[in-house]
Image 1 (cartoon, helix red, strand yellow):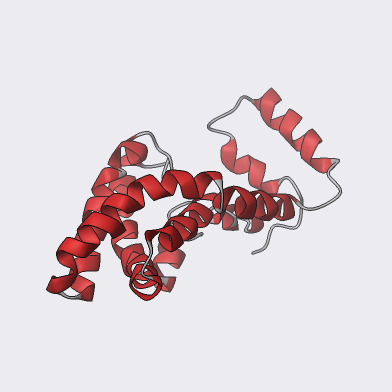
Image 2: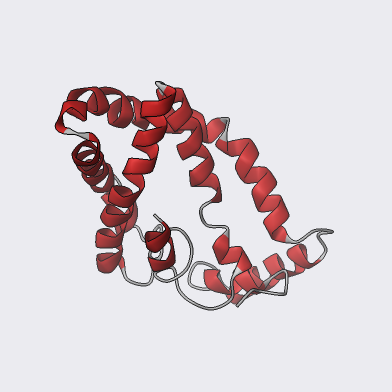
Length: 173
């Protein structure tokens, strides 16, 4: 179900902030002229192709730069699986902090690794067709800044069910 109000997504943050902080955020959002998704999209696209792409470039040098070149002879999907697996392991510290799956950190570790395995062929394909890790860095940077947008747009469900990092996203990937 789509969220109709501007502040419904704030309820998802109750475990991170006090009630007074949540109320203050809701008051600030209510006076915005546009729905928060428009701001999130503008921010995500701008930051995604600039700052986030710069940070993603550091990772992409290893994943789609070094490992891509070393593993491509194993075949596209095997290479993508191996890169995705190690990429997922790389992100376990974030999973342990509850970054994407705060309601169940242990399950979140497995979800994190699996998500990166599923995502890896798409990014490897971008690398293969563009011949550049710059293209993958821009894609990853933009993805990092926009993938949580369904949590703003959708009502109900948990991080395990909705969004690109939930089961719905797994099906899409």
